[in-house]
Every structure is written in C-alpha cells, then in structure tokens.
Amino acid sequence: KRASPPTSAMSMTAGLGALLVAGLALAMADKAPVEYLPARLRETALARHFSPAAATNQASETLLLEVPLNWADPEAGPSFDIRYHVDASYFDANDPTAPIFVTMGGEGTSNGVACSSIARAHKALCVGVEHRFYGLSLPSAAAGGASTENYQAGLSVEQNLADTAAVIDRVQADYPGANDAKRPVINQGGSYSGSTCSFFRQAYPDHTAACVSSSGVVNTLLDFFAFDEHVDTALHSPDGAACPDALRNTTLAMERLFRAGRADEVKAAFNASNLAGTPLGDDDFWYAVADAPAMMDQYGDKADLCQGLATLDPSSATDMERVENLAGIIQAHYGSDFMANCFYDSECLRNVTNANSDTDALNGRSWRWQKCSQVAFLQRAPDQEQEQPLRSTDLTLDALLEQCDYVFGDGTADNLRTANAEFLAKFGGAVPRSGAFPNTTNVFYEDFSDDPWVEASVGQQTHPTLPYCMTTCDGCGHCGAGVPADLTECSDKAAKFIAAVLRRQD
Image 1 (cartoon, rainbow, N blue to C red):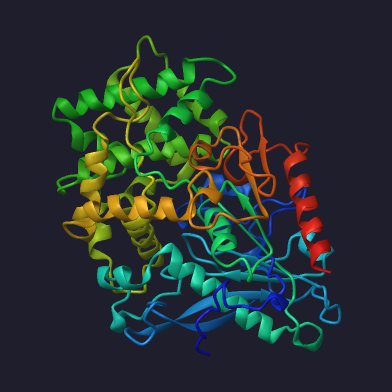
Image 2 (cartoon, one colour):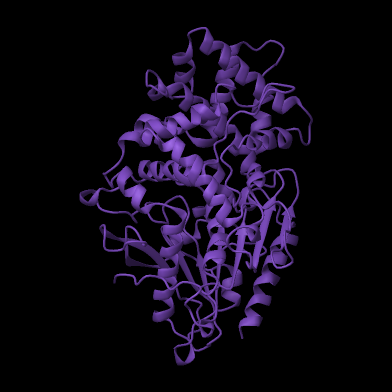
C-alpha cells in the first residue's frame, strides 16, 4: 500500500488523540534493543549490553509501506517500500485505551520488534519502523539505490519523520479504537533514534502524545570536540590518569610511527591495510582508531579498555608495542576486521551506491550522508591547551569535512555548515522549545554519566514538561549499556511518565 501524505499537526483535529511512540526498553529490568547499536557493532562484545529480542521474536510481523522518495514532492521521483514491524501478541484490541508503542528507526537494519515489560503491562500494540535508506528500506538499484542524488532528494531527518507519521496512520487504520477513534500511542528511541523521537514529538504532536528519549542526541553539533573531552574525563574514574594517559601515549606513539614512514605497518597491525595508499586513508585510520576505544567507554566497557592498556609497562614499552597492545584490545572486543569495515573507509563509502546486497556498507554510507548533510557530529581532536588529546591531532575538523567532499562530491561540506545551522535553529538543539516548536511538551530525556554523547543531549531539564534524568556510575554508558540492575531511578521515572501520559489520554 502506498502511504498517504502524513497529516500535519496543524490540520489534524483534536479528536485524533495521541500516538505514544515509545521504544521497547523503558522497563526497569529491560535492556535496550540491540537495534540501538549501529549495525557494525551488533556482533561485538558491546552487544551483550543490549537485548536481541526484536530480531528473534517470532510474533513480530514484517510489513511494507510504499513511500515517496521526497515527501515534499511525492510525484517527482520514485517510490519505494519501507519496512515496519508489528507485535500484537500482548495487544488488547477490545480495550479502546490500549496504546500503540512505536520504536523509531535508527541508523541500521531493523529486523523486528518485541514488546517490553512496560508495553506488555499496558497491553500495547508494539511497532518498530525501519529508517529509510537503512536495512532493506531503500530504493532499488535500478532506481538509484543509495546514490548521492537519491540522498539529496530523500534522506534527511524530516523525511524519516514523515515516514514514521505515515506508518502511524496506517497502524491506526489497521487497529482502530472504538468508533474508529485513534488509539493513544507512545514513541521512544535511543541515540540517534532517541533524537528523532524528540523531533517527532516536536513536529507531529498530534501523532504522538509523548516521547522517551534515551541518550537522545538532539544537539546536532557540527564541531563536536567535546566528545573526546568527555571520554578523557570518564577514563579518569575510578583510578585517575593512568588509563587516559596510556591511551594518549599510544596515540603519540602512532603519530611518531606515521612521521617515521611506518604508517602502513601501523595500519596492518590493526588489519586496516585497506586504508593504505588511498587518498584519505590516513584520516580514515585516525577516525577508526579513535572511535574504537572511545566506544568502549561509550557503551559501558571502559574497564576492559583500561585493564587492557594496563598490561603494558609504560616505562619500557616501544612505540610498536603500544600499537600492538591497542590493536589486540580492539580486535578482542570488536573482531579482527573492525578497522577494515566500510564504515571507516572513505573509498568504500564513495563507491557503494547502488547494490542492495552489502547492507552493512550501505548502512555506513547512509549514516555518513546524514552526518555530512545535516546532523554532523564531527568528532575532531580538541585543541591542545594543556595536554595531548586522546585522538590524533591530525583528526581536524577540516579533515573530517574533506571526507564529506570526497565521498559525496565537492560542496558537500559547505552545504553542511548551512544545513546544520538551519537544523539546530529549527529543532532548538539542547533547548527544544527555543526553535520552531516553542510549545513542545511530553518528552522524557534520559542520559548516562560516562556516555560522551551526553555532550550532544539536552543535558538538563529545560522546561517542566520536558523532564530529564541522569543515571550516574562508573560504566554507565549510552542507552543504559553497563548500568547495574539496581540503578533504576531514571527508568522508574520514565515508566511513571508513560503511565501519567496514558492516564491523561483516557
């Protein structure tokens, strides 16, 4: 079925009620779905912090909805199918107040949906949406696939929000309440999908009554040097400077080896020889080798990183021994081919455009487009004010912008500066009510203390109707990764928030 254009908030009648678009991991003991992880991380050690239930849930039904490439001009380009998933196994269709819980699509493949304990308690219908241009939800190769031209016409946050509204319209029609009334619906997401959950509540308040945003990166900073600074601070606890100093000294060792003409040898130690001899191979390497240890902090595994670094005697280790030590940590945690992934390879990202067969490569290319065209989050090395940053000082903002131009064409970086500023002005960044949606309400934001993406969150309660909660501990990471089972204050508050919103819909 082809989707009808989603009805805007201004034109919908008040009788539509609310779609609470909530994710599946709000409950006290629930882990976040593994779909909150980028696809390239779902088979790594980090995945143990997340639930695989959605992909293995046999009650999850996969459905298709035909959507236009460009919602602003539906007839101008090709249409294609996006996938969404429905689990009705706990849904009470006879209860007109039974809600719909919808998980926002993230930057990876979505293979199903599973109801959380909160969704089950509310007898909810559970829905998961696959984000356009990820997984199998993209135009066919014959229609251009993941070409830059298709991205320019159809891959943006706003296009994804319109898809979500269309899925909600379809689900409301398929599962109506009494007298065809709209059911209450709750949406949630984590990380990027946590931000789109918030954006959806802002842009489509008559499609959703509330959002629970876990580690939602709503403050889409272009120059995101604070990411590295937060990792540095997190690695100082609980044992002081030894861990971050070991990492920064390894970075210095790699820089010395690069200057000595041994860059290819260093890359080979990380199984990243694909980055040798390519135009942007050095910049790609510095991005990958910074991202891997940073994500160990981000996802609650900083203890593994620090313990691995501590096995090396800092007083006698050679530069190459430091390289081999970090390479061993990364390969043990992520697998031997992590640094060779297309995600970090500008040459690969540039050339994977049409084929739908390499889903992981296409996912990587699509996320890079979103970064290079709108949301940015360019994680350069901070300025050297007191000490060497954790990541190489060669990873500059100009280097990251050059990757954008190389993969998607000259002018991409210049366009990003304008588009990113406009996007922040529209949605308000860290102060959601400061932009084009000053009446935004009913978004619950949750963050975790070690997570460097806190620096791209709201960071605090900005309005009484936009509650905020921070879970604090050593190892408390992105979307709740690494959080001890007994730290439930914020998840409990989120559950009460949902219950209160649903009561107001009765």
